Image (cartoon, rainbow, N blue to C red; front, side, top):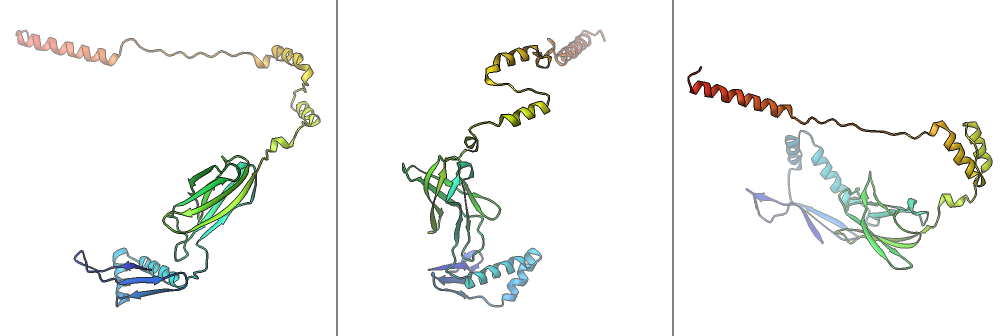
Length: 250
């Protein structure tokens, strides 16, 4: 497998003479540079942009590509195997290019399959600050298998997790009426029990703090648009002037 990174042209015509080509597979990498006087290239980069950053960044990535360890994983996942409720179900991923630099322009898709009914859904992973993220908060409790794939690359990783049927409110089956009564007394309120509903209704009806309030909105619209009226008056005076002028009265 080889890729041409730099090609050569004469007056806009490709002469099929590569300047920089790279070769390799999973175990080795090599490159062929057919150009000379690289220092002139760096000087031209300074003339074009006012600094050497473009040339130095390109050379740095090229060296990093050749020296990178091919055994490192370009796609890494981070997630919990058990989520307590779907609101916490988040899967994050980091993807690196062949030089093992984070690639923010890649497209990562995650496919989630329910282990029980085999229902599946595929969605894009959103780009964040230095990683990709998939929000799975809409999934129902159950066991799931998933796979993350990089679009345009033969790179993917699989995983599985379980979303438990956890609801914080379900953990409290009874209220602490003593603390609620203390709170009511400290705030000027009162405690009402289910068998005291009639007393609550009577108290609300007699309490002046809960009087009904009526609101009205008055919108006044003029029947005559004064701008139109002014235009008619000006037109009438103009017409009168022309008539008088025509009849010799002016």
